[in-house]
Image (cartoon, rainbow, N blue to C red):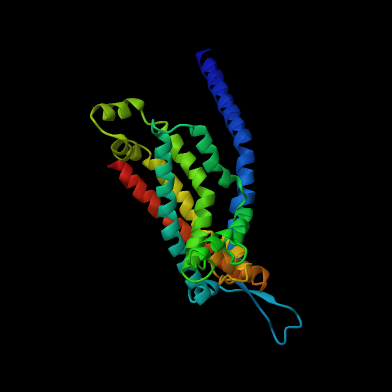
Length: 310
């Protein structure tokens, strides 16, 4: 009887585990299915495309033939002046954009968290509103403000004797940074501000009792507590900066702009795919941008982990 009871208990346990596993698969199955179709399969397809190229035989009457290219497309990209210069522009853009955005977002979040700030909900709404505006619309609005003869800002500057060209030369990079900061700062302020709400009030009160002012408390007490949230914001911002496409594409539409169709790697990939029908090279450029984003993300994550472990 004891053996039979043990067998029944074991069978019941196996049945419970199977039902539990079935429940987990039922709940997670749709997510993994959607994740596979929207992320995994496109990534694998892009990798596969980057390993082939099209070749014409004879005079080309039979159309192009897809042949295995191996690393040929990657060698071509890494020696392509447009890709290398565009990547340098994006890295320079990120070098200006990322620290500026995170610093401003942290400063505004700390300011909103002080006891001296009134009407917090109003400022939350005002700061977050630009993030609601689609990037395409935001870029169009700023191109209008950057275009001579149309912009009231330029007219005002010219009336003061200042001549500023926002769409060419070194000013172009800062014009794009301004568009991105204006649109993204609200989201990052909210992200850091929410993290600030988790800082123990007792810690802040203790610093105040010890004689620390608002500035000292913000820099020495609050800021270290929200460092993980700032690193998350930095990670998202770096990935977004490497995907720079919408803003320079809209700026390119202005007759005054010096932006070309290959100004960034994403613009180069778009041009290769839809202007030259070279989908294999476009996939190669996309893969290289993804690899660069992965390397920078790994570096930021490693730095954040080491900083948190101290």
